[in-house]
Image (cartoon, rainbow, N blue to C red; front, side, top):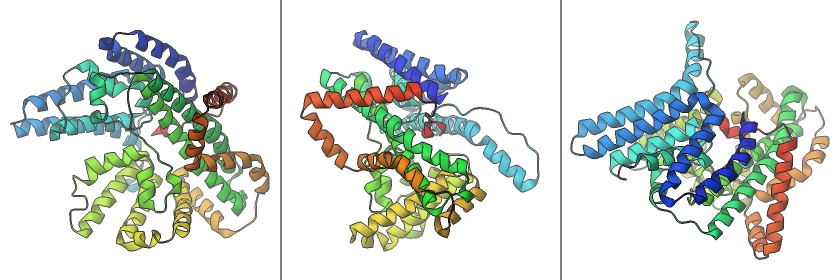
Length: 458
């Protein structure tokens, strides 16, 4: 489904842009709504009613809140309805089987789970619409009275299924009136192509090494191959997710929207605190604004602050998947963030080299915890990382993937941005570079069968 959705996007995007550009300004949002719903329904037609319900519930609830500012119980009731609907829908589709399995394991019961596929992007668009209702409830924004404008916000197809998480306050002005020029469209096309290249040419290629390592069996690989494999996964998940985010931001620019940045070279971080300011920025911002600060943030006693951090990171891990390894992955970062707040951060700032080594080492361990859901296999893999034992030779795989590793390393540091700015100064070279990336990416998509989007499952 994911592979066919990406192929469909290439066929869908030019037609959508053509209709969108020729449509009068007053109809552009309507065109976006129709095209976005069509795009979403093509991938998950049976969940079309859920998307419509998501639009209607939060639209109506926000209007009722707006009209009853002076009646607290009505506002609270409406806010409760929005919370129940959005989180209830997310929990039903994403976490029902998780709780059923754990109840069965704890009690010996034989409850049956549900046989449903996870709606595409449900973790993203539920947070997006929920943030709107919360902002209306807080009085941070005025309720949108035009249902077409609101539907356009909810269903914007570029970032609908894998982010970045766009709040209503980020695009409210552009929903009402936006101007496009050729320079903005050109920038959007360039961002889209670079995002596609990051996803297809780097993430897909280097991700196949991690798949090979899993197929070989963790017990059979050598220690160097284990480290090589998890390094490949670290690059894969970064270029997979940041590549799609860049594609979404580029498509947004083509439509006249400025979506927020979602990644800022996270692998150059010198602390876990800095890493989470650079990785999945919109998710971190969402949890900070709608969970951490309402709990009291850092304006409370230290024990309470650490509890708040615990809640945020347990929820962050659980958001990523209905499995205990994701919860432990979130708590893994909770431990390091608390240790850094307790004084480690000041020591890390004194040594750039050692602080970067510290981050890289523990990030690789965190990605092992993230990637391997089976705890028995996770134990085998972690043991292999530190046993220094022999196994299937790693030299062969390093030789096969060396160029991809070098390219991934280069593109994960700001040096690539400096290189790009120099290239842009020569329009012919810039155009040639974009053409090469686009042709190579399309050729790969047409020829390859391996094209996973890791974050589509979240």
